[in-house]
Image 1 (spheres, rainbow over the protein chains, first blue to last red):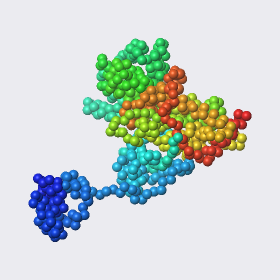
Image 2: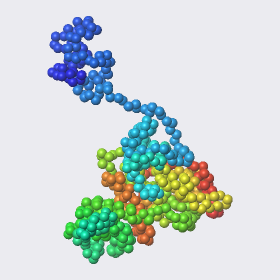
Image 3: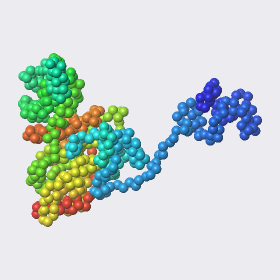
Length: 187
Length: 396
């Protein structure tokens, strides 16, 4: 559809393309009075450059971005077929900043993301939980850990940090997740 | 007979990788034994009067000036890493005459790079080697030392912990105190493509954090590094295995002292950046405090200074940590930091005395305000009050 419009519009200026797109006659010899009188009849002559549309009902309700995309060759990516992700969490959780040692103690989760991709695949809850977080891969040396070196993923959103173990080679899930939310004040 | 021999050779090759490498070494002429001290003679001749350095006239002191360690400790470090450095000679480690670099010269190059924090080009020029050789040698040294010197940095056993506790009590009057905790920022620049807010700290620098727990002799007994500088020290603590172990009663779980009917368990001391926990004592806030609380703060502050001094010494001795590192590999940087901590401990363990002017003149984390963690655990508060009460009774 887009291609055929582009082919048809070659050689005409943007105003002509806009007119033809909206079914208004183009050219030098315009008879707008008669067009307005017959506007509701949808005569094929009134839209000479438009091929029959598969979904004619959408033609009148299309968003302006689509119309502009067609007019100015902005590419097919702007068509309304692309699905938008919801901006907000669908199941928001209550966030309680820790103020006691009990709240600050590491909580454990059953599942740990093993790889970058695995994080995204952990289901809707996990995806929503990490929405808006930036992610960094880090190598941590901790002399109180067996082996000292651990690859971790650090997620950050402002003052909220989540640190998770990353085991790129293993596909098994482990329980060793440190996942603590906290907001702290700085003097 | 011949095929059988071949087969046995093949299986042997697989089993003894290092042996195979040794064989390869022998193909390249190794510098004669006597040449191993030559590097120092030529280095000293070239650099002792170089402009920009205030090198001590005495050669032994001059050695320490450049490498932070005495010649004896230097030889000990060489012995730790010798097997790793001598057995894997890539072509880049051959000097201009086509001979392999001696282990001593490699260790000297790496120590000079870590101690001075100067560019690889400058360090290379001082030794008559190229930048890439400095890069390779330093990294190989770091990899070797972090494996071979692990025994210089570990949590003390109960006997050693008794000594540490005696040390704290004798010097600061704090009963059952095991260590002091602090943290510092290691600053760096990042390539434009890797620039990330995660590494950006509160002072708008890109940095990595190092948490250290220090005994009464300024030795690191536990470290953690690798996490971004944007974290608070309190958050960093909670990410550490030390925190988890202490919370679970698997660390700082030694003998409890009963003083005046109150139980004083094992603990460490930390600054305002840390939460007040039963095993982590922080100072009282300075507004409207009692005499006993002020007395506690005084003694606590003196003990806590050990960690501050240890970090000043660490960053002053190994200036690569106090300069802004130029686009380091963030996966390798923790190893560089660890190696510097290991070297710091080796110096103490070997009984070397450092020049007093080696430590940083200012605070190890200058440019950063002290953070304030408001978290107070009720049993931590009770423990601190008991300690303050005991110290006041001792004082009177």
